[in-house]
Length: 219
Ligand code: MG
Ligand code: ZN
Image (cartoon, rainbow, N blue to C red; front, side, top):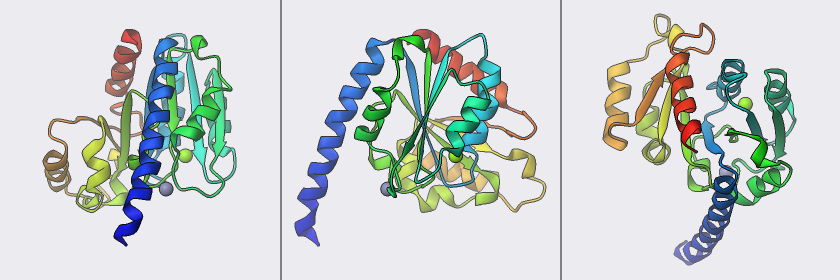
């Protein structure tokens, strides 16, 4: 239906303008911000839960969790030590957009934080199409999802600034060809910063934490 394309483009342009406003607001507070995307169950919330205690007394962290319903993820972030945890319920929408993020930012005094972690709705398709205004996008992949995901969701893999490969402790038990997965990633996003890790065992978390610290100290 080609006649619909201009409408979609207008929506995306309006979103991009608002994302730019969000970025200005975040920048003026001197906060480093990331937008975490993944399919449901890849471990976005687990990653946040494991990250927060490791940043305690180092960075002041605010989290914004997007979900279709419930405040389970914000509750988990607060319990793990987030200095503030805001929940966005999208009311059925399968992604966050810049308007929703603006609403959440208005509830925070951003000057009180060093790092803002936005957890997008679990979905590998459309979150990548809606800029929020964060500095970096982070994709969490996980071993049980399978090694074909870069090939099936090229739009999402192409645009991200960092890739976390979670649940590497399951590699001995799951058919996952790391070389095949990485070839797909390299074609779409050559040289992307990659963090193989396990939220369950803690293996590999130190490199991820260093990356966050390094960026937050320059914000
Ligand atoms: Mg979650
Ligand atoms: Zn969506």
